[in-house]
Length: 230
Image 1: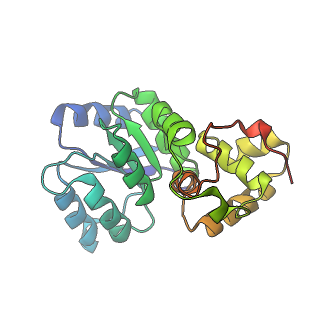
Image 2: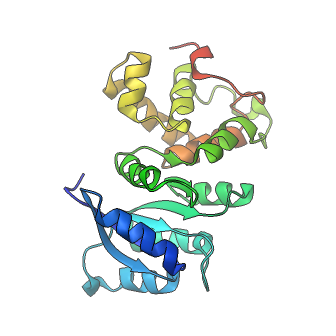
Image 3: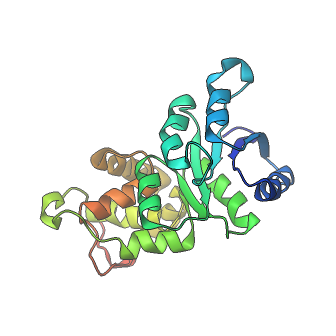
């Protein structure tokens, strides 16, 4: 990871934008590279190669004037393929959460989150983790109903991979999972790579979402410790 995380903020509310700007300026190792009130202007800046270095992370609101965040999300990934996208919004709507994750968002936080939660979320995402609002995480893990028969994907992931996927969904980093399961970081990393490959996704929130859609999680929910290991 770079010495400083370059953040682009896309937020139309001037008052809330000022709060985030002040918070990031006080955060060591984080640099506010740019801020915009609309997705269109932010994307134009990214596509203008003379505008400077691309951000490492885009903090993206969903409710924006003109092009909304969900419409803009894949365009940000295309314009800055190396950047992570973290949603920062007021919306805890089920459809918004699922859509953002399926489009490739690496995090989903609500504006009611504390400044500390937001800055910690930025660091977590840049370390390869998933930053999810606690309520959003509970929704994804415990409430989302499977959309396909469980049998259609049975055997897709091993018990150990399901155990690791569950912990990823709870927001744990790979090192934390390794410590929790008393296995090596390299083993966790290998399992995560296989999970993403088998589910056809690129990050932890999308993997959890896809597993639910495939009916891999029991409808009543489960704890990682209840899964047997391979």
